Image 1: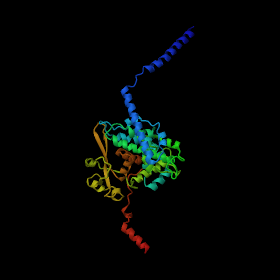
Image 2: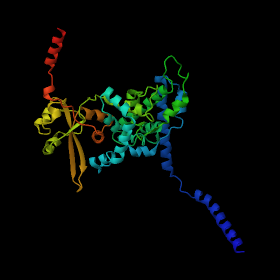
Image 3: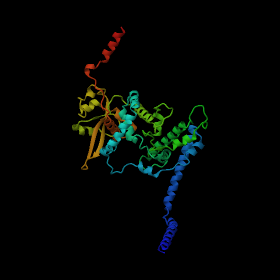
Image 4: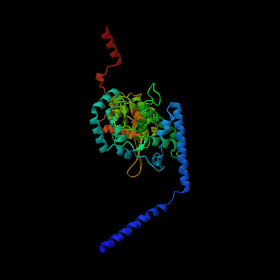
Length: 408
């Protein structure tokens, strides 16, 4: 009897639960009409602008409109991305110490050493051919994605379309939308080529691998649209990515050799100076002088000799006197602000050389470039130019005379 009553009670409870579910759905608060109308308007404007760009690309690049429409039929805005690209608040203070600690830490350094061990032979080959140190290449890939562990989880076409046509309201909204429209176009051309649509002497639809085209549009990226181990934007992939292993295709997502070769090629094409250091530390007593020259612009404005005269650098550095960094070489003062433990504003200053600016071209941030340099140093990179003993230096005239006497 007790068991029977228990089952009756259980049946009543379950029945009550099943009856309340529809009621809860019916009484859920509806989306306010004004908000819903604004969202509908935004989506409608997004679709119209996207379709306009696709039509333009179809005409100028001779890509069938139907293929573009099919590739973007499910494109959508991603609200979270709009928040991620917002500038920091006015109360935000830059913190070099916190930034550095995110990247130059034991786990990432250990992963870098492992990546180097796995690709040692190829890294050595690329270093010899490009002049870019293996440690710098390894440092960049480590900072960007921890060697492929963090490459992003957003569909790249959604990211670029969102930022091209629905960038958040900021002072630079117009210029940023233009930049991302260009990147969206670059993505389409990249995927079109990858799918075989740009092969010579072929009709636009002949032998086109539409599945590959769509897969390229739908690949994962960061919240800014950067792709693969080295986090290249579509334009950088088209201009600087290379086939490292010679298999006839470029795969920055899963092929370490392609990623390594592409990073080296990017730096080489942006004026990397083989054998030269990235930065010089300054003298502690010259902080005030350095602060007057630091303007935040990634431009080499001051000669090494000027910085020596002002006491920011000392002339007894071996790689200044006898190495490749000539007195007339240009440099800049890099400021790396951070709050002290007691809350006071502090700044660390270094002298950035041509190779520092080269890394800034990869990511427009002094914090980033200095982190790459120090990550590379943690991996064993020697941040100085080769010092040649004066006893072994042969002047250009002496060398010429020897050549002439040999010919005689």
